[in-house]
Image (cartoon, rainbow, N blue to C red):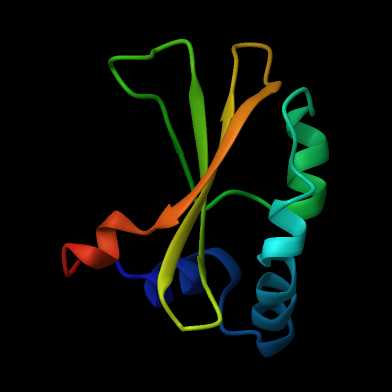
Length: 103
């Protein structure tokens, strides 16, 4: 599912909701997310994640993903990795692998 379809499913077609989503998902807000923060604090800053994933090699970690576009309009993925108590362990910001594969 592409970025547009994902966002439509999350926030509908309301232009105000689109703008609020865009305002939240900015590098300055990603910089606020630090190890030791609680899930509720992260969601208050970034909104609900677009995807939550646990990977087989690290089943004790829960990855929350937010998709966004940088100033060059590249599809990006911000990830906050949580421990079982839903405390941030680390964050990552990278190009969105789903968009790179052409999905």
